[in-house]
Length: 157
Image (tube, rainbow, N blue to C red; front, side, top):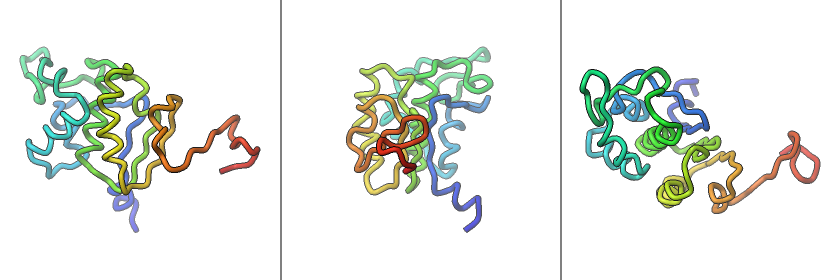
């Protein structure tokens, strides 16, 4: 197995999602460059990102999926960046998911709307989810509570 083939099997959403200074379309398609626009829009809708993407425009007049997001996505809020990252992961549909505070920047209403789609995405996959919100991880098969680097029994998981 090569490092490249391993990375192709992993989808990741982090608390501080950095985006490329490219159109939103490219930032989402980064997860699956072969995806067509129908697949892309389905991922965007499942991540509840369609409403804000439709209203975006950059300084050069590019709109929607063609709007540039600025370095590291500075033109978007934290929640919007996370929804772009969730869209990317949904489009990639990798067998291994790493969710590191993946919904931390979302308000409770948006998180609830995305949660069902995230649960469907997690089905049949290996998921490593790190979260403070119980609602993000409640449906997972195994939970390990960590305190100062140790599990609740005092050992290492």
